[in-house]
Image (cartoon, rainbow, N blue to C red):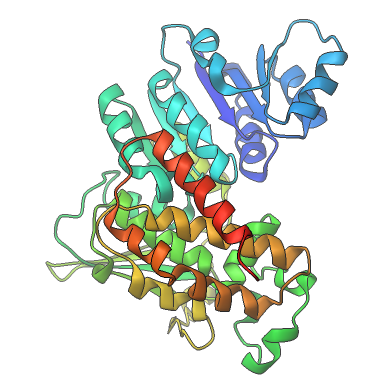
Length: 388
């Protein structure tokens, strides 16, 4: 029997990787739903190639354009309110949630009840909504697999379980981004083009900027804390320029395990799809040259001021993480529009998140999706009114 699949964000880089994997084994899968925000032309091509009956185009203008085409054989929706009609009562086998940004939280949350297994790549779902996501997973007995390479690696080291038992320390590796060896005094004048030129990964603009400031790794620390229910004191970032080792876990019994794979998201996505160690995937041979020169080093807050935010994090779930993410989104957007410098991202981020109105959010816990969305909108409006 064919496995039924849904891909949230199928036109993005991770969605395309998954579809390429399915293409090589097409006879064993049926794609029930594909979604995109704006790229409806690629979405249509994907739907026709894989014979998909349901697509969602989130952008209203693009949705109206695609509806004018009067395409037969495909149900075209503008939002995720129709999920119950698409899936009816029977659960599908697998969902990849790869929508980028905060607006990926709601569809990720709402689709959990419709699937046996969900692989979440949307950071915002974990950072802002893990408390409600976790409850929904348990309520619907849905298997969760983290797809971010670092969290997938930790999950794999822990034998595919989300457990913090007997862990002394978890190290998340960071490449250091494009400015690892740059003179710190020159970072004020770096170009957008240079900021986006990641040395080992090919990523979108937003996440490339976050990688350069190291905020991407701060967010991954937050994700790891939530997913594995482990205190921040047991989590640490280390620089590893080759991006070959993705996570290191030191156990209380003296053993230390680390997971190695090429910097290619095909590997965690493949394993999240099949979740079967006996199935092969074509990859490169082990690179012993890299293993012989792993070159780990501590991450410095002098080079990466954003790391100072780690000291502000509270082990209890709160709205603080939502505020942090919202402010960072705002500042990265201003940098990409050439309205602030690269250094200004970290300077303003620390300044804004330290304001009393945001710092006090560490004592307020989100109860539901509506509250989280309301907080995101509140912080967005608040920072837009400030003089930056």
